[in-house]
Image 1 (cartoon, helix red, strand yellow):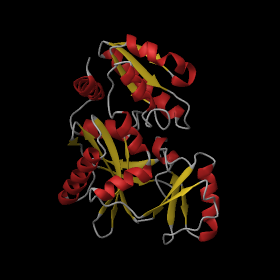
Image 2 (cartoon, one colour):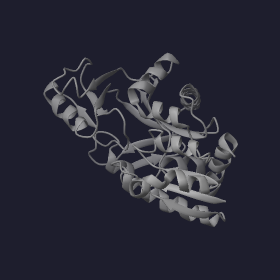
Image 3 (cartoon, one colour):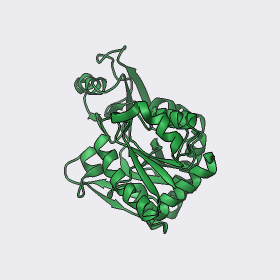
Image 4 (tube, one colour):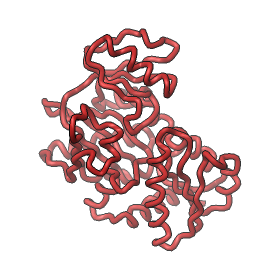
Length: 304
């Protein structure tokens, strides 16, 4: 097939996107596909045209555009199939406050939260007991995220977020073990336990992408009951958001054994250190097999 590989973009996660794209590009060629690379940051005006000429688009964008549904909406106009969630579901998942509303309505545990906009300003007081996490309401890779332990740190944390976007999500800090669970075609993959190395207070940008940034154990060394519970919640959240193809969710397992869903990523990372390829490998899917399955699911969902 003629595959349009879309990566790069203009978000702060551009370099992560390009890193994963190199791995995907090589895999697609090994599978016998003809690959054309497209970077929306350099040639957005031609996306509709080139998409109409492709048999399939493989999206490897993070943040905006990509996870916000914009690229998917253009591809839909071009009648070009692609992997993963559609435009509306992508936008809903990227907006942390909106997705938390969906989680709560579906009975999925998620930490208590507060939504703060730039209109309200950095002097807005916290409504949750400290400590709290303050993070951009839309975005990933832990960019702009702060752990606030005192009320005096709250305005600076909000200003950090407002330098990146218009709204912040404030989330109650829950001590516990970080787990991640991916879904492929409504089937959960093995859990991964994540433990940041060094002095990091949480799984930050460095821990996520440095080769020695974190200890990631797959399958996660947790009781079978916990594994089944997290996997069940992940599939439930995937369906509640209207996602298709694949996704990956981040959880905190509290001391009392409750798994709290933090957020869902609709375009999980595909770098050599990324979590989805590792979980897929544990389930018996080599990287090329994973790419093939994502294309199959995309064609099944949106094939011409």
